[in-house]
Image (cartoon, rainbow, N blue to C red; front, side, top):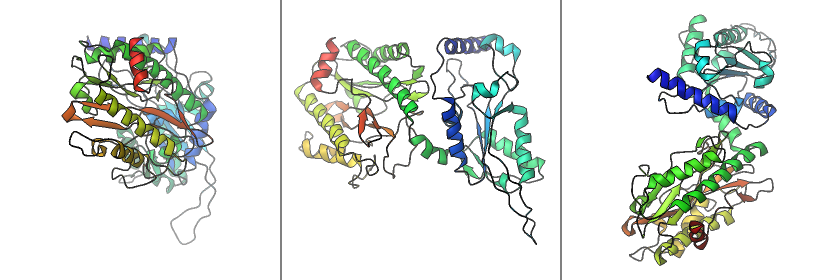
Length: 455
């Protein structure tokens, strides 16, 4: 039964992809990314593997983020090799170092052998023998997966030093096995990775192309529609996860293939828990509910949080704190300077950090029940980069640049008072260095929230 269920789930996923294939950046853009990566490898070799199929039957397949960024390929069982061009070097007299012939740039996608039996459930797959496979995938070369060890072995035969500079994804079992096999074929004890390929990719992925921003905008628009649907479903007596389901259904109807992350619907005391995930409480009169829920459109994420009064009306204290959080978000956005501003500073000492701006605003404008400043109740960083991952990788000691997409999400959490407030939008830094709020169409003001809940 389990095997049949897995095949059935795979068939559903494939049928869904055939009906509504993922949007994509243009194929030449993927090629440009591979070339850009090659320039950062110092003459080495990059080897990446596609994500494995999920273990649980109900989990849909999602490609490894770095692999997808470089390929746009969304099926398991694949691998790629990126080989930078290298110049010829002469033999060094009196040493064991031989000369090296010049080698051209190469990029190769390796595809697994087809399985006719499995394809009865999943539909036909491409392999290296598929007509026009290079044009369809956008790679210069496409080879069978069985050729991957041979290709790496030939690289080593041409330049033994080069095989000591193989960049792979950290903790990749497939890469470890490949390097171990290659070492055995060369009579070596082992081959240690030359570098973590995610490091140069972090810098490349941080700057979004116009095509990427368009996909993030689609994810954001679908997520805005979902948040609005959720607002209309909030009422006393409704289960938190019922509202999570309303939003999930709406974002899928708007074109998302999955949520960007596990939905957070925390009402009453649950609104003070940052990553509350049970979503099992029944909402009550007088509660605030924090909803952190957004979707992923064609592998690109959005990330939105809004805070609503369950009975449709903020109390005076709830409105005070809500307005304080909104003011902090706006202060941080107004302080942004491309190439100078940073996101997070846990110590709130860096004057260029948007985190510090929000913290100082909150401290200056509000008090807790004991008359103390509220800055200590902002217990998380103010944002993160967004892209193929909802938390795209980045070195947060560095400033934010033109082309980046990130969140600004201040929050105040008051367990003693039984509620928390978070407001989160996704922002894009345009070519002029100005912030563009991709969540602008979703209500921000407390009055707008109350009005949206009545529609």
